[in-house]
Amino acid sequence: MQFTEEHNSLRKTVHDFVNQEMDPFIDEWEYEGIAPLHSLFKKMGNLGLLGIQKPEAYGGAGLDYSYNLVFAEEIGRAYGGSIPMAIGVQTDMATPALARFGSDELKREFLAPAIAGDMVACIGVSEPGAGSDVAGLKTSARTDGDDFIINGTKMWITNATQADWVCLLANTSDGQVHANKSLIVVPLNTPGITISKPLNKLGMRASDTGQIFFDDVRVPKRFLIGDENKGFTMQMMQFQEERMYAAASALKGMERIISDTIEWAKDRHTFGQPVINNQTVHFKLAELQSEIEALRALTWQACQDHIEGKDATYLASIAKLKSGRLWRQVTDGCLQYWGGMGFMWDNPVARAYRDTRILSIAGGSDEMMLGIIAKYMDIFPKRR
Image 1 (cartoon, rainbow, N blue to C red):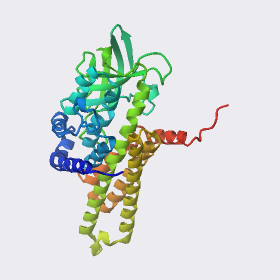
Image 2 (cartoon, rainbow, N blue to C red; image 1 turned 45 degrees about the vertical axis):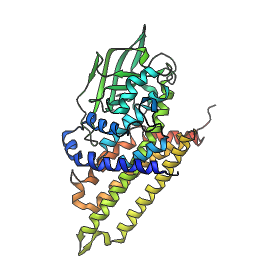
Image 3 (cartoon, rainbow, N blue to C red; image 1 turned 30 degrees about the vertical axis):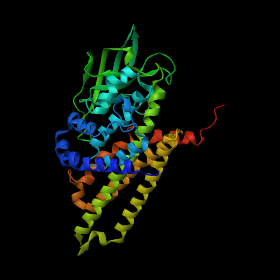
Image 4 (tube, one colour; image 1 turned 30 degrees about the horizontal axis):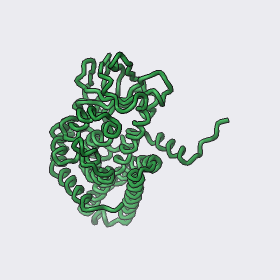
């Protein structure tokens, strides 16, 4: 990937935004269990950061996906995974299908305000009985004249308690499970919708995650994204950008943890010398940095394939798998060198240790990624 001055300028803008608008407040947001997404997103919208690869007609910058991954790399520097995740939901999970397949009317009503930071979006796929098993979801959207009547529940929904609308995946027919689902924009102030209090999670404490209940919720069929019963395919396409975002946003965050650990190990003395003087520390940190560089190369190759219109599913799935696993290695390995301080709740390594465990579950579990990779390797036994 060849980076231009535009890439570098964007990188600096995001770097400065993290330093000025995110890091100084993360402790407060963690304590309160929520970040003020409307005000934060409006600041990002004013900087043009929420529609980098979205069409210019709706307020986006119209750039290719490489610029979005530069953004993801830098936003991932933040001291805590909650806000990068909330932002990624807005930019790479709830809006790609709408931008690609939605009608002009729908994009002006929902995409343009999301790009401007005037609306917060969430993605409604997971359910209590269907997480990575997207085909098994039960939420239904029954046709009633010119409307859909929606019933069901969505679980573990990031941004739920602050979102203005949800990109909902629901069953719109009784057909085959991969061909009976549609993506629908549903405003969350619609009668019949109930949203739980924020769920009490192990990590990502500054991110509001909730359950959304739909009880005979009526929305016009014009809120349908693309063609009816094509939602499963569109959601699989959205997943690829989500997975590349997850991998890219891990890179600078892991490097920052390693850098902080090096500085700590220089200052921390044991047995009469700094911890950093131990060669085993050198080798461990060098090994982790090597793995990060390998993940960086893989992620950017997936991005290049995506930009060129190739199927990036294979490489994006590997990048997603490796990023979640590598985060665990980096946080566990670095925390060890902090000793007792690493076990303190507000320690940045401890926070990353908690926050990043979800990355091997959300957006497709490790097992789902391995299944996709195996499929592309053509190692499934032939049915007789």
